[in-house]
Length: 145
Image: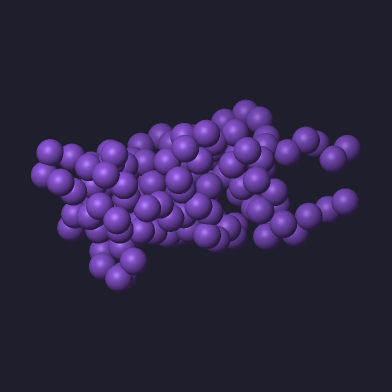
């Protein structure tokens, strides 16, 4: 059976999610999956606070990185991060639901560029993340042959 691009992206996301205990244990939820796109959300708990009483930046980075991973792995090719950077705009607060929306900017050969926008439940921008991806050997789904 041949899958269309949307079905492929969803099947790859499910295969990855089943093994992604880090994202699961942080309470992340997959809100949307499409080829080259992913939206994940996470509620900020007190356990995620830093010395300023805000969300520790590492958790914001982790949410963005997870959205990046699901966006770039929807083509049934194992894809890893080659480089990532983040710019923090405003703090995440305890009790906020942060949402990371990842979208593909470019995918050529084995390399990809993805931008991830992280915002709170009010739509306020919290951070901007850019991830560069690299495909490696292997697939998420078994060969249908």
